[in-house]
Image 1 (spheres, one colour):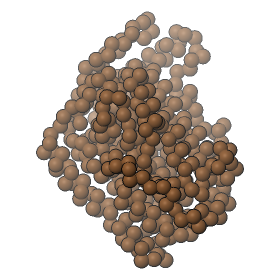
Image 2: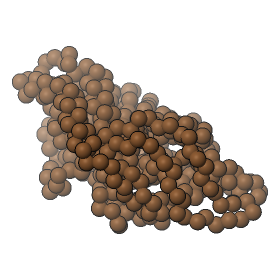
Image 3: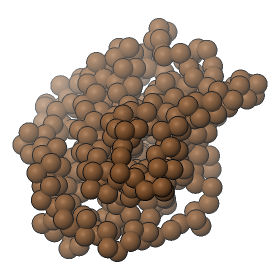
Image 4: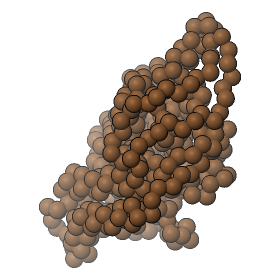
Length: 399
């Protein structure tokens, strides 16, 4: 789920399939048809939403005043009543196997189902798989995200199995999110369209690198970040669903749409927490929102690396922007959505610092769009260029 920095192109041609797949009676070699899929009009790229932090040495920790820990302690009853219901019981949750060929089938029938899965992907160009892989890798780095949330003062899981509603939320949220990477990874493995070795290396590099979202062990900042990020992933997976449907793969479309539905539900929970913080501590919450927006919301996979391309995240994000999966316009749209969701323009009872933060945040989206227009013009002057992606056997994709 991501934004990007790059350029506009007008068509999505099908590059040659450089990887030869093993043939068998049941798994014949696939040949790409002439794709007629129409993608949303490509958008030029802005650096607004996607650049990695300028320096990881800026890291600041435990910025929340100790006395505010008591706010989160006092909200435990409220969290049990208003946050935990956004989780689903396990027996009501979908599982990845529901979307995939059943390995318990007789061998021939199972292989036929795999072939059908591969055939359905024929209408999807390599650019689409770059974005789907990037989304899968982002989902697969879940241990990093749980670690980040468990580092937030006042809401961390102190024992690993705490009965605190904050800890119960984090564990169950992680468990629900864990299905996303499992499903996408297995689908990609069966598709034969991607280099799983390079994908696996990228996941390992990313989890080892971690992330630096600028949340400072501060739950005010952390819940602003997760509210924004969950909406970004809702948009990203929703758009990969749309493109899969347009490309002739209704099963993949249903997979991505189901993941998007989870992200939307999680976004609602995190947004509700920030809404409550704005009620009990309006200035503290408003200042936190402004703080995160000044830093810019950094995508969780911004330290992505495959061992070959040091600008891998930028390149992945550029393809996502060009296909309309996640764009700089989406970044501004999310900000405007949250301003409305939290009724920030009408927020009262602020100190002078809070009022300044309110003015900054409520006037930020138009500024972002103006900066975007300037970046778009620079991008158009640069012209398109191609980059090789190890995830798709080093085939080139135009940015």
